[in-house]
Image (cartoon, rainbow, N blue to C red; front, side):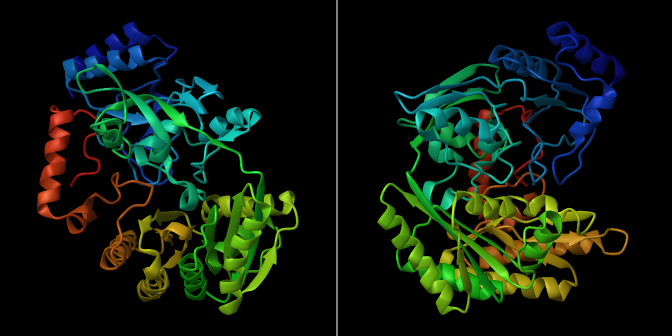
Length: 451
């Protein structure tokens, strides 16, 4: 970018926002990264505080033809929020207004509201917000909407998009749109689009009454294949737990090193939780999971109280930071497959890790077939190129078994090269036409999602 043009953009940004919302060079270096990927240093980082300021940014972007990269808390795992060249990063963390309406059981939230805060604000009214990604205390609603994030509760309750009643966004022309999901579901197009079709400025969310009872168990298996088979059987019998999560032996060992909570290192671990307003039904449903686990050689332990149950879930949420201690770098895969294929898929992924000589750790929301195989490696001793080849092979395993490339982390940069294998040419043509219609100048998060 020519120096005079870059300076013109910065001068306008200073006039529009001043120092309160414009980051200097040392500070903006942080915005090159998400939780996994590194991008380019942004031209500037702007922290808008209102929808009107987002509009001003979009209009400036159009005048100078400079790309905009929307960003939440930076906890993403696919490179969707990192800039690829000289661009303006739009960091939404200061747009964090939240209002709960207990009478309609809804909340209006801006994109900078952290996920956990929605449920915390709703709890005094006996309500909660089900989407709960592992990063729920730091991830923001805008990022969750961009990726259509799920979490442990997604098997029973669904993902972020299932709780959006109305969406407000700024389109590529700088106009504000605020629409419900009647007739043409335009908000549904933006949810999961990773900021490539518009900049989300707010959402009306559906809340649910808190269930009165819950029961939790931990089942310890000799390996992930038996665990996956137990899950498949329990669901076939009609079990619909609120949460159904797993960790393979490497994940369990890493968490135990990290937290020291007494987990056995030589077993794969299944966590199951049922909830509802009828205590007998809650117990009956958990018994289905317990039965199939015992049939497949598991040792089953039930949580005796809320404190014990919360300790188990704290262990599950600690997987991601725990893995960071095993190797300097990792590729976090995120695939979703039919539940009937789970035993075959986890077995094939284990075999691929051995064949490539790389550490592959598996965990995830196994109840809805959403697996997170993580490839861990040391770039000083192991080939990063080989790690990427393995990531591609894991993606192919999902596709071979009728699955998809991403359950909740998005395509971003990480999976763009795989998309041409996942989608037929006609579908890709239609998606490109949609992108061109909603972002004709290609300034909204360019270089992401579509190959």
